[in-house]
Amino acid sequence: MIREAQLVFQHYMPEDDYSKLMFLTVNSVGTPYVYVLNGLNKAGAEGHISMNGYPVKPFIIDPGNPNIPNSQEVLATPEQIGWFDEGEDCDELCDIEFKHINVILDNYTGWVNIEVDEEGKPVLFMDKVTISYADDIDDEWDDDFSDWQSLDDGWDDAYWDNGPDYDGAGYTEEDR
Image (tube, rainbow, N blue to C red; front, side, top):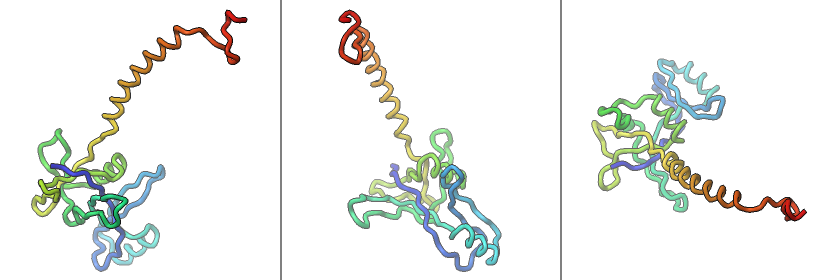
């Protein structure tokens, strides 16, 4: 089973390990994306942090009901985020990469599907969860809307083509 959840990021202050830091930023058109800096020493990391902000860690949460305080639930911690299912085109799981995270942020505004058991708890495979792109419901809605649009077009054409042409004062050309 799958459960829809949200990929979120939390800023943190690195203590000792500056070797691999993930940062979240926004590009020139306003799209968020993540990048990683590898192999920094403490001085290089502190300089980058002072200019670009603190590094982030990813979490997968169920945001819960916005009307109920503290109803959100953490489904996966940074250490548990690891497998990515690329969908029906591929039968194998792959390690999640930053390109996957950036597509999730750009195309799905952070929403993902996470594999869960019957009780709704995340399934761990080798101590990691499996996520995939969220289903794109908008495409289904667009298809349904286009069907209604075609029905409306037929009714509008039949109605307006059979009636007389009125001017702004309510008269037809024959009335003048």
